[in-house]
Image (cartoon, rainbow, N blue to C red; front, side):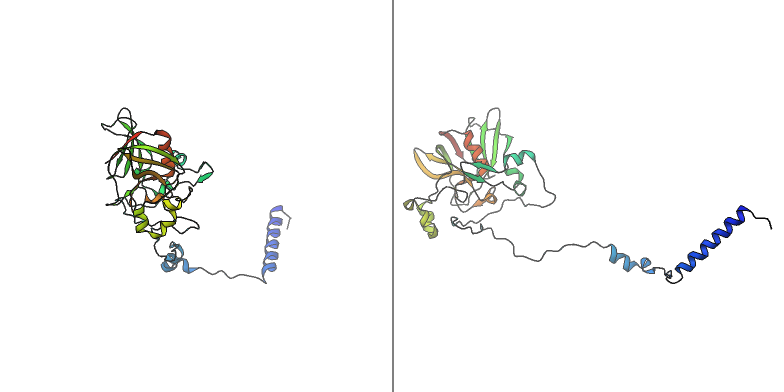
Length: 274
């Protein structure tokens, strides 16, 4: 039979196949059909989502955490009608600039977690119609806002924390004194209610300025007819109390906001608390 290239290729291919078969004959793997993939129960088990369920923990107290050397401070928060909902974090570059870390007179104020505060109580320019002259401070105790009246029907609005019923002050007065990083001296009536504050009384020299001081970074002292009303517009380290009613009667502001207000108003500024 005459030799042809086609018959040679066929013979060579058959030889290679036989050699490969002989090489793997000692470790052949049987072909098994995986029927579990057709089982609905297996499918549900393998594709169902897995959720991380954190262990139960008691709800946090609304009392500030104890800190070494901190001034004893009790509060009773009356929540506003706003209920915080949690989802994707909202980041506003303007708010980041307003409420970021501030280094001031040797103190470092931490950033305010503004995303956890009702946006209504963050500093903003608003339309505001009033008969009060520009430069006047107006405190709306019902809505818990402080307005700094501006020309042309505008105002800068800040959120505030106020005193609960029986502790608040209302009326018309004047900011007769301003203080940066003020000392705090609780009134005698407060000392009588909370004897643990006696060491911070006026007779003891009051509490030193600092991050734990209840008056915060700035204080504006309200006078009426030349007399100190003992009520202040001041900062607070307790940012969660802004927008709510607290156990003391002063007007509380976020530290970053009270610094902004302090720089805008001079001594002698008129203030109206509605």
